Length: 359
View 1: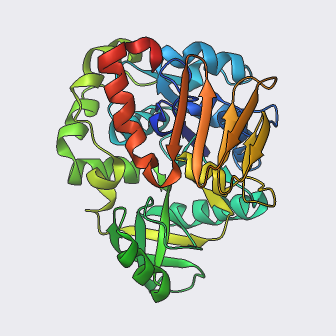
View 2: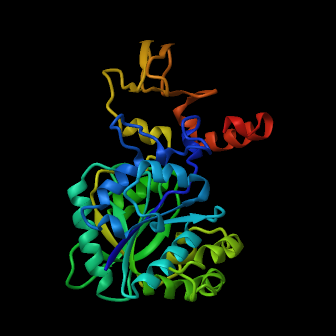
View 3: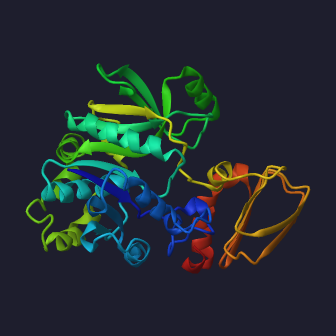
């Protein structure tokens, strides 16, 4: 059967001050739809995978929010990590858990906080992807057709097309977040696609890949083979999970394995990884400004995003060009959009200087 794993344990510090340790961005409603990014992700996959086979992997501190936002998810489908160890341990644990339930399972694994505008194309991509990985020992990633030379995304270079398919290719290379000049070369070549962090594979195929390419992680989780999907699973996880190396699935597996393929798709996708990404994905006024759930009185401002968690608040601004103005809780951020990559470091500095109450 087909399963879905939604990874929802991240902090999203680049969206500070909205995204906080106590309530990260996946639990927020950025678009005023009444549904958080996590809820929208869950809704989106139900067309392909039924709710009873959707699993959520998150940090255990977020369990109450998961249950509040997605009460329809069975409690046993929420896997609670005792520590943050990036995506490789998360995926290894989830694959073991699912394989214990269904040895023939195939899985789609995806982040909880992305934007997909073309949902029908998304559903079709998943269905075709499932069929592709179920036909062999294949690790599949979705490659998003690029529309601009983005420097904040990883890139996938396509190789030869898989015989008898359309839009499925061997992966030739992965490149992490290139500079602008290289991103422009990638875009003009027509061979490179954005790495969306959406993966499909059979449970046995991804666990085999861990044994071959990340044996340290494989050994840790293999020790619990008799415990997955039993009452002893969480005791094992709580004892051993934080001994796994903190590593991404890209570094641990995808960049090393030879049976990696890409399905090239156009989904109207954004990772919503930053204020700039939210700005790009939101409606603009005549001056290129974006207003997120607030009232703004502006003079001579352009290319600026204004956001507050208080819909009654009025923001008055003059002369701002290409800025982020974000007010939430006990913190106000005013920052040029071009410098938003510094926000993550700023959050670390705030934590050191003023304490955890501000992050």
